[in-house]
Image (cartoon, rainbow, N blue to C red; front, side):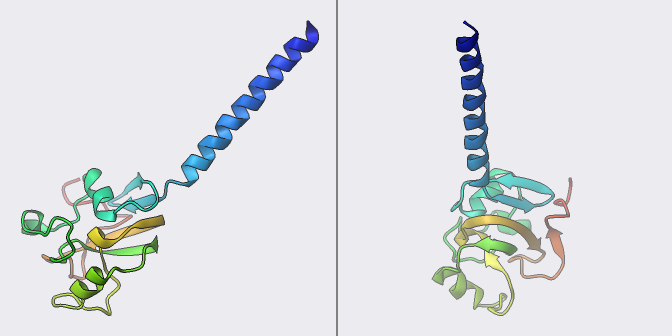
Length: 146
């Protein structure tokens, strides 16, 4: 009886270790998006615009919240600065950011055309298209009104 009890305890410990290991693997596969003083977890490959909007982080400024292309990549109003690991720019992202008021030399990306690959930090700038120089929100700064 002493042996079976010891085996039972050993199995429980092994089972618990397996659960912890699976949890850590799952946790590591969820990149973190830091924006507007929020830490958002999402599956790798998630669309950045969807991740931000689903967590009520605004990707559009002012009236562009009403007047935008809804993620087609044609208007450029969801431009944000992204630091760290994201997908390469799509042709739509490059094409739209090559037109005024954007400039292709600036380190902005269209959130609607960007996939989250790893942990990232995001900053939104002022201006209708997010082309300004003053941050509206960033990883360290919350959105206005919070």
